[in-house]
Image (cartoon, rainbow, N blue to C red):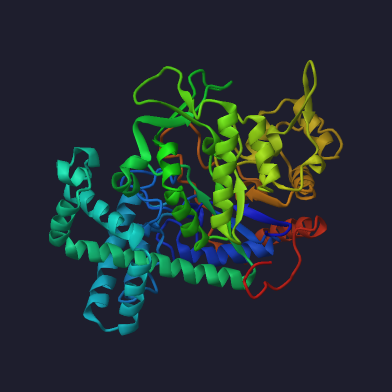
Length: 525
């Protein structure tokens, strides 16, 4: 279990470094780790980095839950690619604060990756060939289906797999073998790209561990319907029903996510092998793993496709839900090994879910704005973070919330005073809706001083920025597109940024979240 420390929540697409093509890349995590350490933080918490389908922007709608998205590859040092070509292309494609259009970026990177593939095929680097073969053998349980699915999507103009010729749609071995022969070169190329992505990720991860910085990943609740895993493992899902969230104060009919509903009975009969493989794969990538929508593992809210009436829970009874939740969480813990598991337990959460998490010592979330004292007749104000449990993850917000400064501006004067009282500071008084640095740091220090094992703060809240990542229930270019306002390497030399980093590091040191110690041999503190 990772000890008391602090982390920075930042999507990989938001990371900005001098060599990227206008969107975050694996290599940018190294200067991001430098900044995190300068701020007294030892964890970089990411959103999913699984490959998404063309035209998709949400990292929670994966083309594959095993494939790393090639859009994040740092190409400059890859074999067979001339760094000068990368530099020339970067000057033409990269903007400033807005990320490069993903579709354009994929086309550009694919052309450069083809040059690397030609070099690989030439046999000029025999060791590269040996490493490639080892990768292919090690990951065959998902890699063959993934590359064939992606190649077939390309062949059929990205049409939904359910519209493919029946034999291919139904994953018939004879038909797959025949079409694989005609697509052999493309399949080999796609395997090579995944080899490069996993190799580069491993190198970056080892570098970060050597610096004493952990990487946190995010296990999306389910693969998307248009994914290699659903196509190849249709029996694991009930495709007549989809997953969402039940009605609450914000939605009378609940949320419709469109994710395929897991067939828990079938998964149990197969010893939850698909889930086990996902966790084992994550264990090779991350030090911390966030379980998205953990309540869905206990009781999955689901509905008929295209139906707007209320859905239902699977399993239906609370007794069965408690049993299933504990069963699945124990499996995840067993497969996780030394990887730290944390659970996103936000939304409409029955009491038994948090009781199970506590019994298994899995940290759940304590989000400052949602931790409220309740009295018989009225809202009793905010809970002092000093009362958060040790086995928890404290935070000021998530990728789905507005930022701390935006939230502050929307509060009433009474609520602002209640918040400052909760963090042991004088009532806010008149603030004109502006969260100044002194109040911001008072809020942060109170959260960081809490007993919570982990604190993970959105980077916007560390700097007092007002740009958010995603607005749930909306679709648009503003979602999943925010980018750091500076190149990390340049910012580290800016005196104003240095002063802010020093203030944050001091908070971490005062609250026992950071000390300059060396990582252990295993890379874990």
